[in-house]
Amino acid sequence: MGTIKVLKNNEDGFTLIELILVIAVIGIITTFLGTPLINGFNFFKQDLNHVNIQEDLRFTSTMIITYTEYAKSISLIDSEPASFASNEICIMLDQSNDTVKYLDSSGEKRWTESTITDLAFNLIKKDNQQNVLQFSIAGNKDGEAYNLDSQVLLNNIAGETEITSDYIGILITE
Image (cartoon, rainbow, N blue to C red; front, side, top):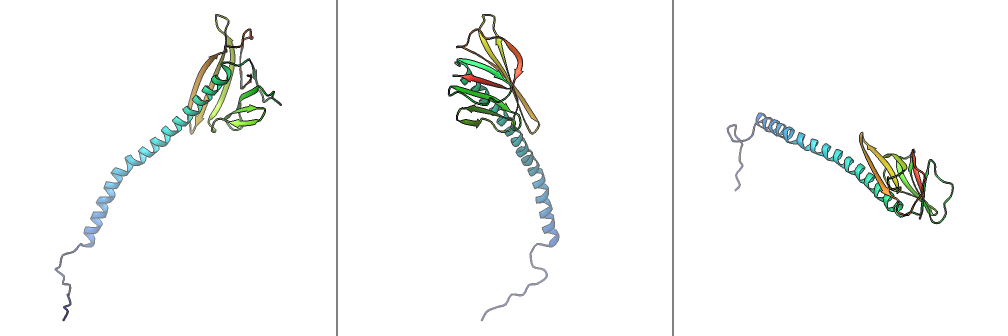
C-alpha cells in the first residue's frame, strides 16, 4: 500500500525572512544595473535628435546646391509665388510648419520634418565677379539647435546684383 508523508517542523525549506532578503538583494542589484540602462536610453534618444536635425540640415543643403549650381536664373523671394512656369521651382521655408518645401508647377513637396526653424538666402559677388548664393539653415528639436552655413557658386548666372538682406526662399529657373 501507499505511504503518506507527514511534514515535520524540522524539515528543510525557505522561511519568509529568507525570501524577503533574496527579493531585497535582487531589488538592490536591479537598481544598480537599471540606472545606467535607463540613462543609456535617454542618451540614445538625445543623440537620435542630433542625428535627425543634422540629417535634415545636410539634406536641405545638398538639395539647394543641386538645384542652384547650374540654374539659368535665380530670384530671392519673401513669400510663395502665386504660379510657376514649367521650368521654375521654388525652395522656401514654411514658417507655419518649420519645414522646407519644394514647389513646382505640379504641386508642393516637403523635404524635412518639423525641425527647420530658419532658412536665409543672400546673393553675393566674389572678387572675380562670380555670383555666389550664400545660405544659412537653422534647425531645432527638443531644445537641441544646430546651424549650417554654406554657399554655392552659380556657374550659369552672370551679372546679378548683390543682395545681402536675408530672404526665406528662392525661385529657380532651370
